[in-house]
Structure formats: structure tokens, C-alpha cells
Image (cartoon, rainbow, N blue to C red; front, side, top):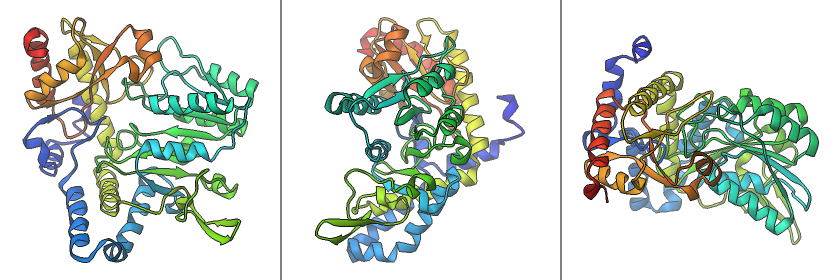
Length: 408
């Protein structure tokens, strides 16, 4: 942690914790699930709900139109895009599905992905394979962990896929995939690149130009520290210029111009649906502004340093097996507790005011089978957490693991 002292001061951390009321009541190490929101995000959400209570939903939305427009600009600034390239959706999964549905896929067409792509994405691919005969190809992994770029490049050259998909930060481990390198391969081959950044936005600096992605799907509730139930999709200008739009476009995205005709609206809003949770949209905009003000470069370095500190401590802890491996690791620490179900451990820790989450083999069949684990405990610190909290977590974990009755 000494390397961070010139980047982040004690007063920075104190301010972030002061801005985060939840820090008073718990030790929150489940930021990869849903982070604690800053007070300013809470104020935006509650303020608009109060406006809806007084005026009605349509009237409140009309008054909030400038603030909603600011949300698009704030998200665009966070990821290095234009506001016209941002669509607001209900979740990262919804964003991913909208993007996927915009690609015309027929029997025999190929999608190239990896062994570590998110469960919902894998299920969508398998559904397309079963219903429409789409071929799903998974690139091999490097021995050290993470996708083998040579394997992915070879699949792209050999099969000319209609789409390449990558989960930048898998949900079940600390791995950070080489997203920009994958983007470069796709750009060279002229293949659309769909990037799941659900666990990356707010945890890592994001620049869609540098990533060379055509779509980027994200949520507000994780490391971005926004409210649940809202997310966004970035759609590149080049895809919009090609007329890309979701299979089931609605009146938010197109005008019904004749009995059997429609015209698409400009911009990424064509990937939205008409009904939006405006209170949550405003909260997501404030979360984006808060992240930019805090400085994602700095906060990412701190979150990753905290995770590295925790991995080192846990690796030396009897009864704990750290499962993370890869050339680059992020702010998710995954571990197995042999002889214990991770769900039991999660609940025992939660009773002590320490928040983590548990995952089963069904959340990542390929990766966890390869690692020989049936359940994992996921611990995900963020920049407002402290070393003292990590030490308290480790001590509680040791106590819980050594007390089977309380862990059941």
C-alpha cells in the first residue's frame, strides 16, 4: 500500500467514507455485487421520486429533461465517448442482449468468445446455437490465465465470425482480460467487438476509443457505485452509421412512418426502450460524475492494491485457497474454503456485518470445473475500504471457518 501514498491521502479516504453513509454500519466487501452508493447518488434518486410524488411521472420527467441529458454526457465522459453513443437500459445483461440482437445471425455463423465470459452471455450464445444453428467458438486460455490472443486471432482468421465477445472482468475471479488487445484483433479483421464491462466500469479506467469496441455493456450498481436497476450501452458511431439497431426496436428507437415501415432515430437511443426509471437514470449520472471527480486512475490503483494485499494475506491463511490467476488481476478476490460451502460462510460473515458474496459452480462452469472448486467466496474491496477492514474480514473468516456450527 505504500506505493499509493503519493496518489491518495488519508484525507481522501476519509472524505470518500464520509460521503458513503453505509461505511458506518457495515464492512462492505461486495462491491462487485452492488457497491455502497455515495450520499449524492442517494439524493438524486430520492429527489426525483419526491418530484414524481408531487407532480406525477410525466411532469417530473419533463422538468428533469436537462438533468437527464446531463446523465448521458456524464456517462460519455466516463468512458471516452459521445453522448449520442450512449443508451440507457435496465442492466448490463439487457445492454448485452440489445447489442447481440442487432447482429444478424444465421445458421452456420460463428461467434468467438472465451471460457471466462459471463454466465448470462454464455446462455445467450447457447440459445442462439440451439435455436438458429449459430456456432459458438471459445478461444483457449494461456497457462497463466486469461485468453490466449494467438488462439483468438486464429479463430477469427479461420472462421470469419459475425461477432467477438469478451467479458473484460469475469464475475467469478480477479482476472482482468486484455480487452484492448482483443479490440485490436477485431479492428484489424473488421469484426464487431462486443465488450461486457459490467465489472470494469468504475473499477478500471475506460476509453472506448483505445479499446476499439463496437459495443460496451455496463451496469450502475457495481464498482460505479450507482443504484440498482439501471445500466448503459455504448454503441460506436461506426455501428450506428451502418444502421445497427436491436431486433425488437420500440418507439424510443424508431418512428412508425407507414403501416409497414419505420425510420430509426439518430444515435444510440435506438437501443433503449421507451419506459425509463428516471430517478435511477439521474442517480447513475451522479455516480458517473462522482467517479470522474474521484479520479478513476487513482481509485482503481487503490482498489487493486487493497485486493493484492488481501490475496497475499489469504494465501498465507490455513484453510483458504485463493483461486485468482492471470497476467493482470483486479479488485475481485475469489477463494475456496475446502470442507465448507461458500454460501454458509457468506451468511455467517453477513451476521457479523461483513459483506461478501458466494458463487456456485453453475455461475462459471468451465472456469470453476478447471479449478476444482464447487463454490467460491468472492471478496471485492473498493477505494473507500481500508486495510483495517481487510484485516477484520480475515480474522472473522478464520473464526467462522474454524467454527463449523456457526458457518452452517
